[in-house]
Structure formats: structure tokens, C-alpha cells
Length: 334
Image (cartoon, rainbow, N blue to C red):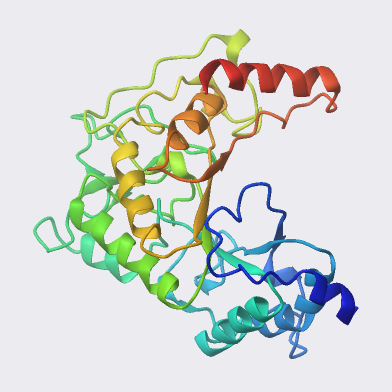
């Protein structure tokens, strides 16, 4: 095994800006990976123990799913502290040790960044919901009820029901594209963007080589809060949400995949470019315009390096014809 590990080492590891092109990225969900202390939950120390095996496979990088502090309502995708490790997974010192060992073995380290929303116990949200005049009052997406008390518009949550949750403190609704415990951040606020870029820099300074950006096309919403129009039945599919969810009945023009996102992605890329040999891959959840969004987000060299959509997720089995149709469709928009 040691010979195999040595074969993965690259003398240009620290300076190869294009390492991500054609790279094999090994995803690790820490909670169900390797438990190092016998509590039944995988952790960062457990990942460290398995790094020689991963390196021996010949992969180029590891992508670690969220390990940040979280109430775990959505298995870590509800972050309550972007800059610390949840105790169930270990400590920041454990993460630093993991990064150092991965680099010693020739592996890049990518981590999951969940920037579109936080946990509802995050200090930012607690302050935001406390009043309509506090310094973070506009850090989340708040809106008044309609005259009859119903939500501001017809937007739906991917996890079911309305995308709006009434808050008794502010007596307003807040937006949540996922769980009600995952309020959406307001990317129209420059202060929010700056805070999230500071989070990104925090991890870059700790030596990470890149990021997997969760729900990258959900960052912005239309400030007009227009109703989404209906989608013809023949155009509905269940790539984004299960078929039992009426989320698929809407044409999601106003609650995601907004053109304003391109400006933030360019700010994000400019930050990454300050750290040579870093890269980002975005998850695009849009069953109607996914390939178009992927093409726009990766165009040129000022946005994200890579994106993926869910066009290969379909009820039918993958076939040569399916692969060809997706690639031809992408060729028309790229």
C-alpha cells in the first residue's frame, strides 16, 4: 500500500492551478464513515485513519460533507457556526491534522459550504428575528403577510409546504427553501455577502483546496416577490423534489436561479484566485434550466470552476441515448 500511496504524490501539488480538470473527487459523509472513539458516529479522526486507503485508490481530492456545528435537523446542512467543528466530529485541531495528513499523501481537501441558508439557532438569525431595526434585520429574507394574513406569495419549499414561515417576534414571514429551521440568507445585502466571503477565507487560511457549494443557484431571490407561474404538466419532473411534492408544479422563475447570482459568484472566484490551486464545484438544483445555469455559472474564468446538475437523475436507467441527449443539450447552451 505504501508504494501505491507514493505513486499519488505530485511535486507540483501546491502550484497546479488546473488540478481540478479531470480530477477524481472522493466524497466522504463523516457521520457514517469511520468512528474513531467508539461512540457510533464517524468523525474527523476516523477520516484521518482512512486517508492512506483513499490515497491508494489514486483519487485526487476528498470532499467532506458538512462537519460544522449544527442542530442536525438536516444532517449538518443547517449550520449554526460556519467556523467551528461540531463536537460529534471533533475539533478544529482535528481538521487541521486531517488537512496536513491529506496533503502529505498528495490529496486535495474540499469542504462543503452551505451558504444559502443557516440553522435557525445561528446567532445571525437570532439577532435578525429579534426586531425590524437591529443591525442584521435584513440579513434574512423577511416579508409582510398579505392583508388576509397568508404568505407573501406562492413559493414552495423543496421539503414540502409553503416556503414561508410566520415569525411571532417580528410578525413577518421569513423565507426557507428547505426546512422551516433553515432560514434563507438575503444575498441582496452586501454585508451578508461579505460575511460569507469571510467564512470562505477562514477555511482557505486553514489550508483547504476548494469547496463544494451546496444549492449554489438558491442564493438570490427576486426582490419583487412575484408569484411563480404554473408549469405545464408535460414539463414537470421530479429531479429537484419528489413527484408527490407540488413544488414541481411551478416554473421557478423568481425564487432561485436568478441572474443577480453571477455577480456574487465573481466575487467568490476573485477570493479563491488569491489562493493558488483552489477550486469550487457548485450543486445546481434546477430541473427546468439546470444545464443553462451550469453553463452560465462556469462561463469564462471569473465564476466557479465546475458545476453539476441532476439531468442524469431520471426514472429510466442510464443509457447511451440518455447520455447523448444530455450532452447534446448542454452543447447547445454552453
